[in-house]
Length: 172
Image (cartoon, rainbow, N blue to C red; front, side, top):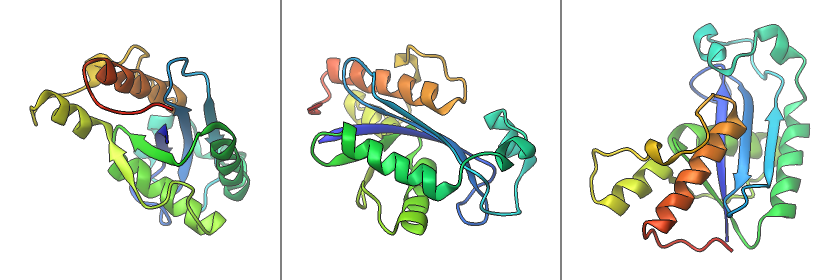
C-alpha cells in the first residue's frame, strides 16, 4: 500500500457547484521525491473570490488551465506508475480534499483509483498522542504556503515524523 498525501485548492466550498483550481500529491516515503501537480480549468460559472484568492490565482488565470479530464487522467496515470499496491488517500483535511478528488475522478474518469476510503492526518496524530485537542502542524518542515505540493510535502513530513514517534504504518 502506498500512502498518497493530497492537498486541494478550490474556488468554492463543494465540487460541482464550484471548481477545483489545483491540487498536489506526494507519495509518502523517505525521499518525498514523487510529486504530482495539476491545475484545472473551471467547471462552473460560480466562484467565490475569497476562496480563489487562497490559491493565488485570478479567475482569468484559471480559465487558461488544463481541461479536468486531462489532469485527472494524468493523476490516475501518475498514481498507477508511482504507488506500490493499493494507493491510499490521506490529507490534512480529508473532508474537504477527498470530496473534490473523489468527485472529479468519478465525474471525469468514471472511477476513483483510491476506492472509497481516505484518512485524516490530524485524526491520526490525535490518536497517536491520545489527545483530541492537539495539532500535528508543528511536525511539518516545509512551510504551509497554499501551493498544494508544498502543503502535501509538509503533511507527508509530518506523517513520517508520526511514524518515527510510533505510529504503525507501512510505507512500502
